[in-house]
Image 1: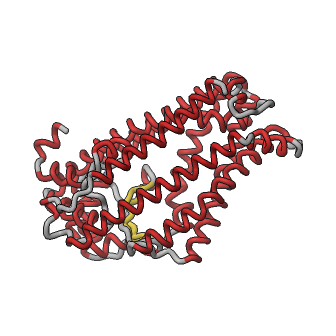
Image 2 (image 1 turned 180 degrees about the vertical axis):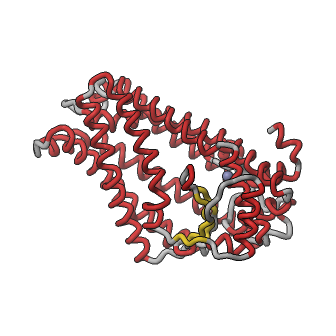
Length: 416
Ligand SMILES: [Zn+2]
């Protein structure tokens, strides 16, 4: 076993153990005592249910992670990678098509292995806690559309990257960087109009009190807003949410129908004010720039390692290829991805606080933001007391108690 294999094994084991540890701490942090600010909001029964939900989810996550690790190690050490390579090479399709088939088959296998877990998650766990609304027909259609979309959008991109690294020599990484960036921007641009409607129905919000309140707020903060959309989130789950998509003139705000049902108009305006806050504070653009920089770093390193002999030896591959090099590099890159991921989460948590503060200040109604957060937590069975280490590794938003605390004490938030 060579050094690269040891690094990848160490990273896989390290990641597994770290997550296990964080999960364990998280479960230990559960307390039967309801936090003070949630008294009168959370009923004792529902609070217990939220903790049950956390336990079931955590244990399910352990099982899936252990299974995935086991399958990967068996495939790796039973020399599955070179076996599949010999089979694909026998078809003599040339480097690009061989790469598409090699990576395509591995992705297909991965998808098939995760399918039973996904079905169990939707139809057993989510159903048990009263969230699931997905019918088997919707589930199957979603899956087919997802696969088709992945093929349609993924194939040209993958083919282009393979071709650059096959033929463009040392310049490949930055050609790829430009190509991938343009492609990502294009997909983000067409997503609201062409991709998302494949999965959900978006209807412009009806004229009425809610719409006027939102538009009045938007014009108050000089936020150009053409329309607000309602999405039939209830088709799949009773969980509720709101989000922002697109950019430039085509940006749109989307409210789940489930959200509209549960909140007062003032709460909904507060939630949307938070979303517009992300935009006004340039968080959306910032995330895009970071994403592009990270892609550049990854492609640069890929360029350095893609023909490194040790990378192929680690997986028992006698013949080198761009496609296999890409795949193995992805595993070597995982630890860097892990650390940049943590940095992104830290930045995201900071931005969430800033968006909360923006909403509180511009609506002059922090109380509605607080009640909205409380209702959302109760409705979605959120964990009120996550362990700080778990938050550090996994949370893109600060824990809800911290958000409520900062909304109630803006002076502290200013220094956070
Ligand atoms: Zn946010």
